[in-house]
Image (cartoon, one colour):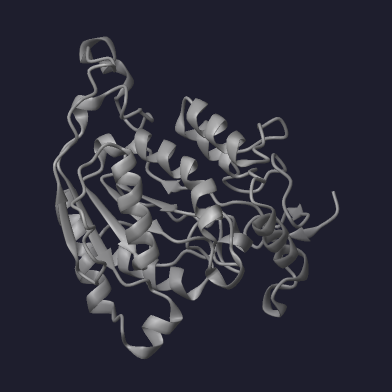
Length: 308
């Protein structure tokens, strides 16, 4: 195979990376079903019966033409400082624990960050700040995250992006946000039974997170609470759907360890949920002092305390 060497493994890869080529952590294979329009996203996200299946399908999605063109253009043209590396150039799946207590919701992968490394929040300055803070509060195994395959692990934590592809100027359109939403909805349905705190990065993450929680049946006040750093919203679990299975004993063996579970299958497992707002660790915010390390640690530390 021709290509450039992966910074961690040294194996050569083309840019963008074909599914199943051996990239560290790639959940997809050559036969993974591909969504090419919004109705496909609804169908493939809704029919995924496990988290690894959902991750795989989301990383080969081609439903938003503008985002597909942009992410692949960046993967070919590259930033000069990364010209000797292969670029992932595909949608970036959620990453971390399959049974998280803390969920971090962001906007979208960075063009030369997650779009390059294939892992959310990895390989850019925002990720540097975020992983350092997660490590300081005990939610990450180490304080750096440079590339998929670097040994980083999250502790009782999962990261997701509201939009799975890198958008031009970090600004997805409403159509792209809504087209991508079923991936987030399906992921939340699987992981929410164990989640106790959701940290929403930036106003986009806050808005996307609250919209998704409404779709999961949570009662969010109207008008929706405004975003702000340190904003907190306490939510009671939604009432079980009487149309869904309620016999826990028949399914109790399926929730041991880190096994993915569907919230719809286990409605009684949902507990109280706290949603926290946090300024996004963008360079604009960190360089200007709008977001400082103590401010970031305070919100993530609150989430860690809730998880414990």
